[in-house]
Image (cartoon, rainbow, N blue to C red):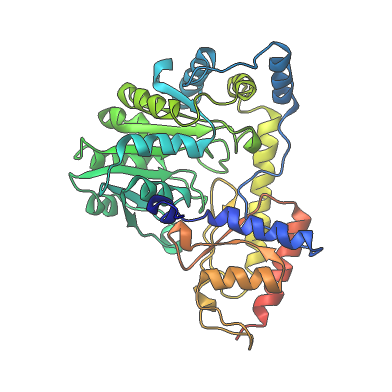
Amino acid sequence: MQLSKRLQRLGESATLRMAKKSREMRSQGIDVISFSLGEPDFDTPQFIKDSAIQAIEDGYTYYPPVNGYGDLRETICEKFMRDNNLHFEPEQIVVSTGGKQSIANVIFALVEDGDEVVLPAPFWVTYPEQVNLAGGKVVPIYTSVETDYKMTAEQLDAALTQDTKLLVYSSPCNPSGSVYSRDELEAFAKVIEKYPNLVVVSDEMYEHILFEGSRASLAEFPAIREQVVILNGLSKGFAMTGWRLGYVAAPLWLAKACAKFQGQITSGANAMTQRAAITAIAADPNRPEVQDMVSTFKKRRDLILTLMKDIPGMKSHKPTGAFYVLPDISYYFGKSNGGTTINNASDFAEYLLLKAHVALVSGEPFGVPNCVRISYANSDEQIKEGLKRIKAALAELS
């Protein structure tokens, strides 16, 4: 028996793999501090949980529409007008079982064997794997800590061709926490105008976790509006990772294609989650439940950046969104403690897991091989202890 070549070329999620290793070590009684998963350590707000309970009582236990309940899609349209000043019709919204499925819908609706898909690095680990699964070719745009992990309009123009099928990026970014300003997005829009066959996925999953500046979307620019797909969901801004709900707002022709694909893969997203989503999305994003979480993440960002300053060789920018730092750790490449030599970021992460019992994720699958991703979705005490362990373990390398 042999697995398909399609599956064999699919890589395992690096974040989930590190989380799995952490759980295995904890099951052996080892005290592991995890900075690996991109999951808020807050409980879902009670008013959202109450609406899901009410949905069960109200009998929402049957198959929902493939693209989502009509009143949920209407609520999402209202959210776009309220938060982003963007007009969408409910038929342009497709609700899915999490952001991963939303992206998969778009990629598999568009990408054929050999099609080029441009990904600014760092990128979320799932983007290239889904492109590979669809038979596409990843074209990375490399950035660095010195450029705040942001691509420039010039880099974008150089990477695109008339044959490029898709561009996928996130802002606020997973894994860097970098956020593109409206001026930067306007410069991208002027480039994209030259490529009318290009479709752009703007992943805005971390939209509500913004520390400085104001939110902006590439869909704001009329000249390219029909080329832009917005991805969003509930996992990050509402601490609803386990509820599994994402959605896209897309040109009508592409929304229909996504629904067609989804209809043969999972059909509609969980009915009770959809009812709770109406409550979450309709709520004021400035509610204390949301803003207290954002305020806490900002304090943690400042804490971890302060602690990292005391660790030689960890060079970081100052992220303005999400809940990650992405330090460049290439200073340690070639260093050894006599038994272990650090040749790359994966070695670095493995060394800290085994030596310091701290789990973080190599930057290699994110397209930044000189870096590691550290999630600060963790308590102040765990952050302090984790950075203390990291500092001690790295001090043994020379």
